[in-house]
Length: 470
Ligand code: UDP
Ligand code: UDP
Image (cartoon, rainbow, N blue to C red; front, side, top):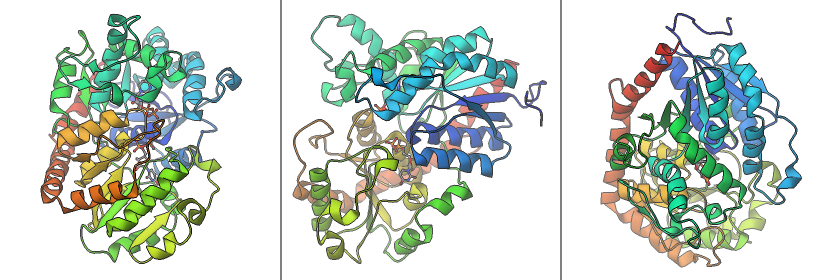
């Protein structure tokens, strides 16, 4: 197999560079499959091993095993002394290690004969100059909402304007809407935070990209996408390709690993239509033991059936506590029959597409939001950190579900009580209008990704540019 792709430009060779964490890796593997199978590209994915979590390494192995046409480009990181950042989040540390290794990419791009590079936003500001030096057009894949993209792009301007002015307040993104101070990602209130430094540099760098791919679709965030494209958020902003919802790609090796998939799917099969609340806070959000217990109480008191994926640590490899210990004595026995609780990895898209699922209680990691939208399942938003409140606002504004803004997030002392959780679940489960609106968005997502839809055309335009750049 040629490593240089098709030099005629008929099948442009696109190199994809994901960063760390399932939330970043998943959209990249979906884009890899979409470009390779549906849009006539030769695709390579850069793999940095070992990954931070087991889920990431399984996912990468499963991708390469299932899709031999997608090539793998291995990169070893340059040595990096993590003790410079005591106590930092392991995923942010990996972003930093990858950022410092960016020069290694130059020779890799040249050897691969890349027609185009798509980098994760977390690496954008350091990768863009390396690609420019090699004459390879570099796009950015933004793995969160267009609302978060507009915030990220505008934030450096906001900081310049408010210099010396007592911390980050409400951020009024031009042409979009006001992001209240309480929705600003926690880390950004600390200018010395590693994430803040990366985020501001990447935000500044975005204008130098050849284009920005964002995992959203026009019907979900119409005003925000328009404001970005019109240059209202940041003048001279590069072309924005709304390429979402990036469609799930199934990899057999990963499915085999999932906790006996037949188990929870069989359980769902036995439940009435729209009766189950699916509860998950993503792949890397630890919830405090006290809050976990309150959530357990809320689910129990709601009286509804539920499927709950419990997570109590940031990195899956560290997760050793038993469910009984986490949720309190007797809980699992009391809900037996109407609930399935697991600590394992589940195939989330399969669950969301199941007819028995009527509500998704979600932290609003952006992949989860797009998967709910694609499946037409309403979301009850309980954001915990980072971009999740900004995403929760998209859920509420876009008609995908409800957000109880008073509910606390990481770093706030207040516990949300079991009664509050139960009341809200009951209210949203009973809200037929919410269900209809979410189903309508599901239809709009399907129309966007179908041949001739807005997402399909955005992808085709992006690929056309890669071809022309040969
Ligand atoms: N996911 C999954 N099974 C799990 C937990 C997570 O399939 O048990 C997937 C989920 O479908 C989504 C991704 O992992 O595609 C998590 O990304 P998201 O942006 O929702 O949240 P993050 O984990 O980055 O906070
Ligand atoms: N983002 C980022 N790093 C940057 C600039 C932007 O991660 O330097 C985006 C990215 O799309 C991510 C969101 O902002 O999804 C940040 O969300 P969060 O704080 O939850 O971090 P994550 O865990 O998703 O990396």
